[in-house]
Length: 352
Image 1 (tube, rainbow, N blue to C red):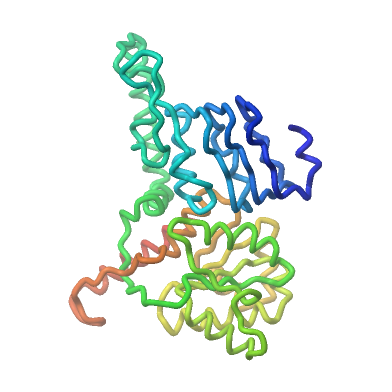
Image 2 (image 1 turned 90 degrees about the vertical axis):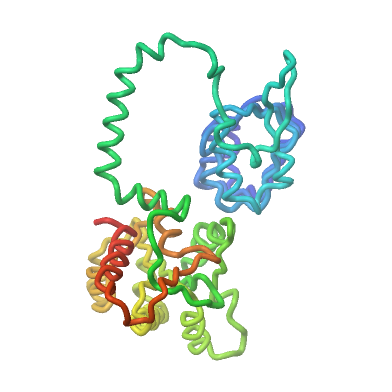
């Protein structure tokens, strides 16, 4: 499989009907491989290494049916990943795993995405194991260390809980109905990267985000300036992909100004900035408004811990709207508490 490393233009890969028993965990991790179609069906795969497809963000079709996956703890990650990339998986409800039936040597096939998480177990949990009693003190120590770690990283934990279950943080602002969920502002020279690594991931989420791109969604022949301003106003959030080229592009800087002004007008946190990992903050010094905004507000670093979870928190998915507390705007006696709660939610977006 080392041959894949040199196939930089490979987009479609059929490995079906090959009696494959296992796949190398780093097989698809090459940064130069951007597959669109991958067929692994009709093989003898019993498991897949955690995150084996994590670098393949360009996939539009993945076939996994007719394998011999075991319904054990090593496969739970695949269920979670399949649910997140539901639109990519071919015949998703036909991707099954094997669990033992009542009769000896009999297996029952069950759809992976329909199994509860606690069905993915390793070993016979009903069997008495004396090692449990020996390991109990060590387990208690690990548990206490875990509690301490959760306390120290509680903000990141809240981000994770929010992104997974939409619990723990209230939406105090009312989310108005908009045409788009996200308007993405970027330099045209970064278009391929933004489309492959950001937009496609957002549009493949469950539920998918409705993204507006000027190269795709603007009407040819119409005034681009007016279309950009209208699109920003018609989007729940504006996402800026900040690169060195972005800072040198007058159009991009104008879009930042429009999005910033819209956030000020709405008095809401609607502008999200992603800073690429190769861009030092000092590069923004010449753009005073942007520098001041980054100093006073939170932003995301590309590839940081919980990156996608933090982005999902900042942009609640379609259907998630603010909760009406039953008070008129400006009325009631809990405004200070609400503002503090909202500020806390925003600060959790990226602790610094």
